[in-house]
Length: 114
Image 1: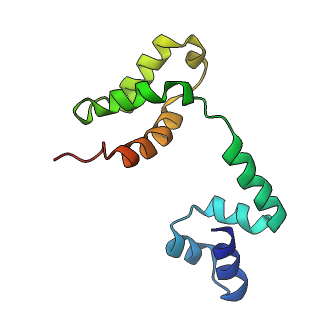
Image 2 (image 1 turned 45 degrees about the vertical axis):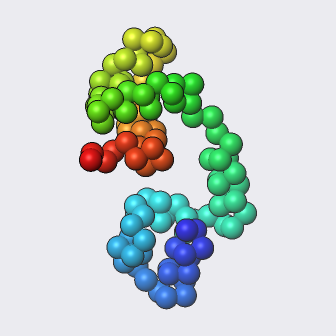
């Protein structure tokens, strides 16, 4: 997507707002991509791929809780995780949990009701 953003901005002379409309990316992401060189972008991607997710140890549990009749809300799962791991009490886990749950739902088709 870095290449697409650069192409739209440099070659097609589109504004950041128009790039946002065409790509669906956030303006902050667009600005970040435009400020990066290609090598910086590659380093950024590699760092993101290799990072350990704070919830990886709880993947099975989160998937199970999401699976119960398209069940638990993110807030309910957050409460359960905070009971299991006191370290979670120190952070606002809700946004992280929502971002973590979306791919689980997509992979498992858990978000769709029949």
